[in-house]
Image 1 (tube, rainbow, N blue to C red):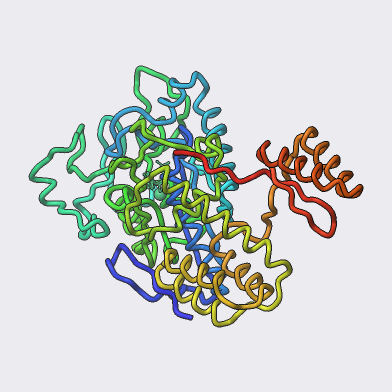
Image 2: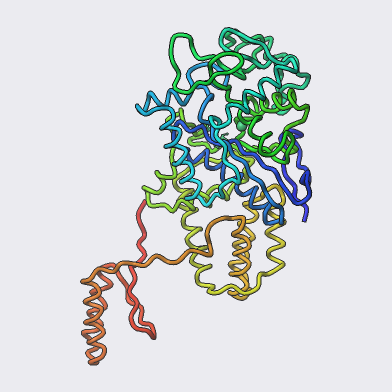
Length: 463
Ligand code: AMP
Ligand code: ZN
């Protein structure tokens, strides 16, 4: 079946064909580990996970590479200000290396909570300093760099189509020069290597042919993607904010060194917003998966929430929305559980589902097909087998879910036993009043052939 994906580079929906038949190389920009990931960041990782799972459902083998930015990402994307890691270190009182480890572990834990598949290769910027130095040397040898008192910069004026991905108006920017320039020659130039400040010692710094310092933020992705996927591979993804600076610069670096376009497809996830503004780590409006869990939500309710919208639209956060997603997920899981053992999947429904996901990951449509299946008159065993196929993309752990075991207080169980005794002795009035006692305490008794089953009554919680 054909897969269509929206490619930001050409601004069009294109049929996806892997460069190597059957294999897909996919690179996703990973987190800057100076703080926890927020649910907006995680919306982007969920989109990328859906992409990978869709390709895998089509029988493709995906080699998925994700970096961890643990050095070089400055407070401003325009290469000014402090390194985010060093700033995080001051904020927490831990070393830059310690916070990198702490927030990397927290990030991996978040991925697991959201059932996001781990990449085939994890790569840390600080483990690839030599590769980055070699890459900068390559760009330098091709004549695209210059030196300033604070670092080695990429000269974007030497590249004909610099900024094409973002359709940047380079000349307009040049004329306006609103950007903090420092010693840069052009507003779009960016740092490849920054020198350590002469008056202070950085926690993270290395020797290089140009002087002691650290790599710029963009070079790690060009260097590590080339190492693990080659200089031209299938799909590169990230959040929409990367189009204008980070990905434009990655493309420039790789084109300068290898003369290739870096990736065949460029895909971007759109922002999660809160009160119509971007959710950001520095904006102080950020919610974590942990925050949702503290409010009693299953993390997968967040995944379900994200699946309700297309990845190419901005999505507004609301607690009502999360609540709705949690309820839908609960209903879906309960239905799937009650279907029992799987039989043989319905080709017709699998086909419909694949059509939806292969149409540029149309998850709202894929969810509609899912609910259509739930409500259909297919046999439960067929439904079960079919939904397990869907769940290879949905990733909602539908096959594993079991209703939680309820803990019924001992006093209630005591009354239930007394009622059983009364029934045995045909003291019907006693039995009835004992049942009423249980009901009044917020529980209900269901008499089954195996004996009474006691459940907590569902409560409508006022908003
Ligand atoms: P960072 O850790 O800041 O480098 O961001 C990690 C990923 O999350 C990147 O792909 C960003 O583009 C993406 N991202 C940042 N903010 C948001 C947001 N509010 N909604 C969706 N994705 C975001
Ligand atoms: Zn990147």
